Length: 333
Image 1 (spheres, rainbow, N blue to C red):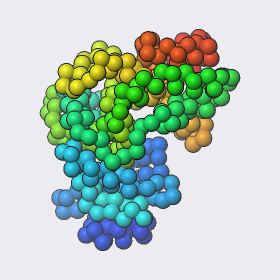
Image 2 (cartoon, one colour; image 1 turned 180 degrees about the vertical axis):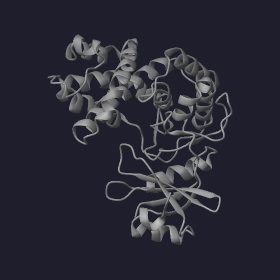
Image 3 (cartoon, rainbow, N blue to C red; image 1 turned 60 degrees about the horizontal axis):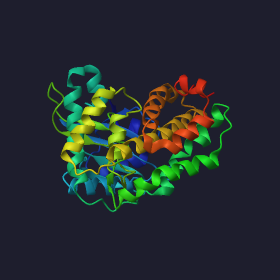
Image 4 (cartoon, rainbow, N blue to C red; image 1 turned 60 degrees about the vertical axis):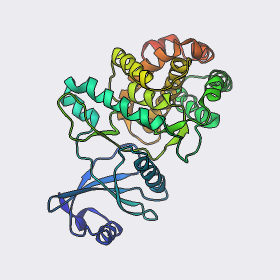
């Protein structure tokens, strides 16, 4: 670890001093796909997490709002110790280093327990009215799905019919939107890299902490299930996916169309992710995300087999050549 002054800009040192953490030891944590940076803090046996989400690229206020709302509903979001939103600094509780994905790499015997706990954490969140967040509406679903035609198709040298792509999604998603109603709180990136295991037992059970939820919307309860069980960064066996989906349905009040809605949102999210990962490569120079595309594409192909995806599946058949699809989406160049 390093001392505060050697790692953080002056505004960060000043923020920590105002929060009572002057002179603490600071350990930078490697970043991911955003402008946010994270630091683990230590002093005299105490720990905390420091996030820097600097304007204009980032805004920590949604994170703060969602964290407080989740905590108020009994969900395990990190406690907020101090914040300076205008400068992008947030000091929070440290959930430790047992990220679900990393812990399972070292403890594969705990997979069933960890995923069961992650399912069980969603159920009470879905039993309460959605938070005061923007709706996951048609425009949002469409804008996200369009990332495939805007980024992936050109990178693959494919000339696709973007207009009929939009028509196909509208036809497929309209019944889901009618069933969604006011919705539930959707965290949007609820998966093994954004779940922290708090003192996990050997079988993976135990309390879990939530992170990276600042983009929460009010949407369909199946969306976070898809995020978890069709994980872009970690293989989830289809048999485990099926068991966890049944575990959720046994506890939640779902409609007869829930399996269809799960497949619809699976295909929509996976189309979005293929586009995002291509954009991270083409625009941001981050080629490592290309390695995840085959996993995402494979899950999307399974989703497209559901009858509810008929219009979208037909569009894929007309626009994405079979040789590309047999290669699990190919590798954008």
